[in-house]
Amino acid sequence: MKTTIEYLESVRAKLDLPSDYAISKALGVTRESVSGWRNGKSPFGIETAMKIGEILGEDGHAIYAHGQIERAKKPEIADFWKDISEKFSASFRNLLLGYGPHVA
Image (cartoon, rainbow, N blue to C red; front, side, top):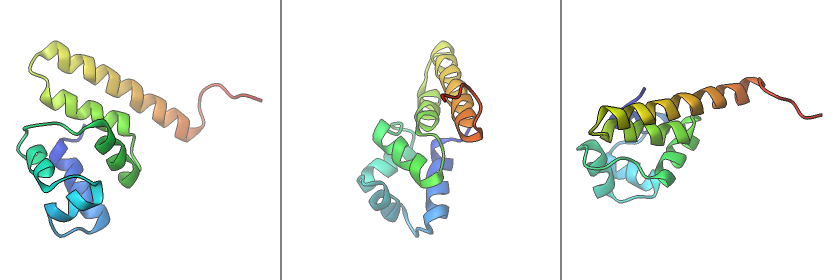
């Protein structure tokens, strides 16, 4: 599981961005939002997780769930989001690899 900071650094590398300000522009958010994510004050919102997923070619659902896992204060809440993340990741892999039911 990637952390919020790892996702930000992946976006920076993928788009060859020089700064958090540039990351904020690429994601359509404020510089303060990026700072808040780096400092652990808030997780990505759904729209941001989707945008990061598009940029990185990853599942936005799992990215959102990873942020919730990081933020969870109770182990049972973290476990809930881990379960969701694993289900989304498995479904996404199956979709990409063509597994699962096929409709004729």
